[in-house]
Image: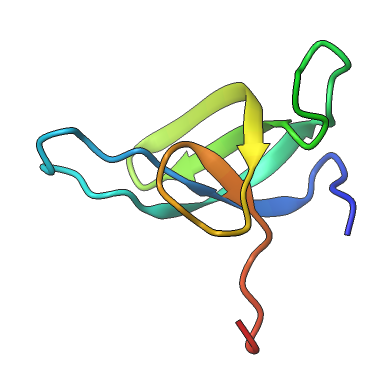
Length: 80
């Protein structure tokens, strides 16, 4: 699959070093496709939807392993 602007993906947050907040999977909307200035051609700009607000970031790396650390992946399917 190729991402497109406006598409929903999932973002995995970092969590806090002390563990007060654990890494979480959040819905995110693609706001920009890979930019040639990014080193990773699967890196996107996203609007991440959190329960307490939104944040915008660019250059978010793609990682289907779903490890914590500020990455995006495709939403899980029923087979996942």
